[in-house]
Image 1: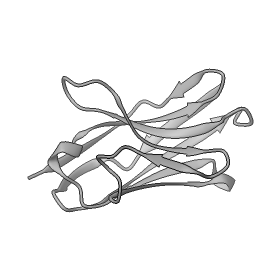
Image 2: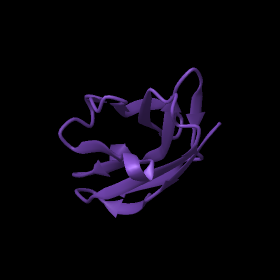
Image 3: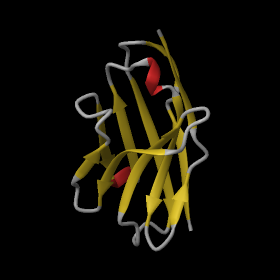
Image 4: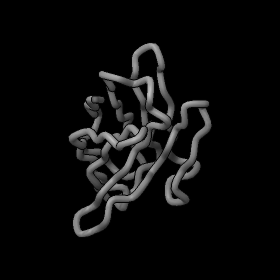
Length: 114
């Protein structure tokens, strides 16, 4: 079992920045990748960024150049640094850990005002 706890969400003006954190605990040795997803009201959950066990990363086109995913292995924590935020980035952001099954955090709200 893996437990994930997100933090760092909040209200920010357009153009601002936020840094989300995802603290993981439990059986991490089978985790192949960690990712951030988001879900806006009335929309499907979408993949924002992924960091794989080897350290490589992937980003959704909508956030490339603005968001950065990173990790601190010693702390079992994954981060999502979000810069140049736009109102369309408003969503609940979820942390996920992928192995033979997926684990999800409870989500953290990010609201970007125009």
